[in-house]
Amino acid sequence: MTETVDVIVVGAGHNGLISAAYLAKAGLKVKVVEAYPTPGGMTSTTEVEEMPGHKVNDASIQPSLFRTTTIMKDLQLEERYGLKMKVIDPVHLQLNYDGSSLGLWRDAQKTADELAHWSRKDARELLELYRVVHAAVEIGVPMMQTNPVRPDIKQILKATKATLKHRGELLAIGRWMRCTQIEALEDSFESDPIKACLLIGLPFMSYDSDLSGWSMIYMGIITKYGVAMFEGGTGELPAALIRLIEDHGGSVQCGTPVEELVVRGGRVVGVRTDDGEELYARRGVLTAFSPKKVLRDLLPAGTLPPALERRVRHIPTRSRGFADMKLDVLCRGRIRMDRIEKWRGDGLDCRLPANGYHAYEEVVAAQAACKRGEVPAHVPGLMQISTALPSNRHFAPEGHDVAWFWSGLTPSDPKVGWDAARAEIARTVISQSDHFYEGIEELDVYHRVRLLPDIEERHFALDGSVYHVDPLITRFGPLKPAAGFAGYSTPVPGLFLTGSGTHPVAGISGMPGQNAARTMLKLFRREDKKGTAAHAVEEARHWDRVVEADESGALPEPVR
Image 1 (cartoon, rainbow, N blue to C red):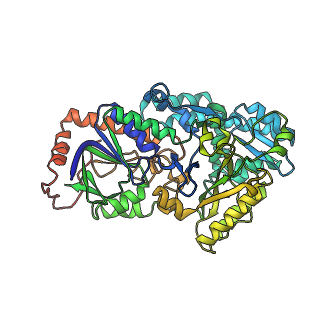
Image 2 (cartoon, one colour):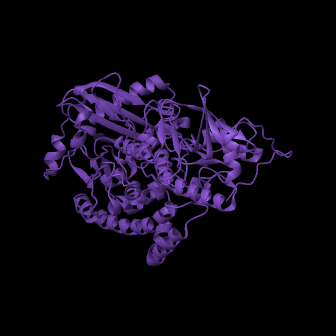
Image 3 (cartoon, rainbow, N blue to C red):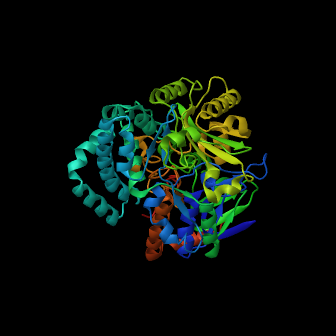
């Protein structure tokens, strides 16, 4: 069986679908193939097989950087396809054992006012940090929303204008970004709630690594753009994108693992699925999952020159010593947060934000334990009650709750083995969270833990890396996923990359998908002007014709 379209997108996560939506809207015939039986990747909402009538958000829940983009407007996702977001404010609470809590509000002054309960000095320091971080956001975001090796002139001008506007903050930005995350926190703050809060949710690099301080740029996103949840579940995002793609003549085919990229004459012209089906693309193939797996395992051997093959092998996907995990807890009743809500006295539903509840030193110790291969005595992370959002009540039978917990601090190679680690981590999280999420331990009727190998299996993420490339500062921009492979196009004509492993970041940002589609459309227009697209079209249509590579075996130069 064969089929020919303009573009094949491999992977129906939100970045792949966003790229497909832009391409389809531009008039190209697009086909998306997804290995898993349902679409969405890390933005999927699925029913729990073992507990019919219960749904969970499989991974991500909060779009933050997504709100900085024009994706919703460009694709008319709300107006035409019914996608709605609710801003969660505060986005996080730091829960303390004595029942007190600190909210991270969109209004920086409101957060500072709460922080003054513990330290007036810290409240002043927080506002100063926000001033510096806001400047960094204004400078940085335009460069996130463009190709990192061939940036759009408009985005360069925006970044330049912001740099000039905030030139007084440049020294402070540099000082903050080049230090360790621990140093940045301890230099600025003395009280535990704010230090713990800014550590728990941002375990991208080792806390004691130089340049890890950059991660606190997230604080600027919170206040400038707000952080939201998709009403009805995270899976509403891929569902809306699929409706758009199908409206424009495209299709999405799930349960279709791709086994190999089809290469003719040094150009990628299609894919071969695990059941032998061959799909061909006139203009290109875009992959939207782990770039290391794509370039190392799906490209036929010898397609890349040896130097580039070595570079691909060394893309870091398991270098940090700690890894992500996901815990779902299905409850036969309502979880309460009476102690926390009584202390606050402001009527806030404390179940709705994604909350942390560990002390600063417990978080630092947890990361160190993970690096030793130990399950930490405390597993810091963020917990959120999915059914607290009114539009998500269908996640469970009436009167029941579903809890979502995510941690970036579990061992990547546990000494006790994966089965023992799963059991110990579930027991630790559920029992310790019960002090804050009252009743969760007693109400637990089913829970599921996904550690590194489970995330790898479920999300086709090499080494269980939800980032696809370890989020080291040295792997950003033109070095992500590796030198020579940034910029969404690759040294192999016809092959394009998007997803969390490409510029700029992971999480629900949509930027890699938007940037990749724009890059492809620009390239296609250049090919059309030069008449170089005809060869690619002919190649794909006559896929059975043997095309000899030149004697040197070198790759043809890609069209730029």
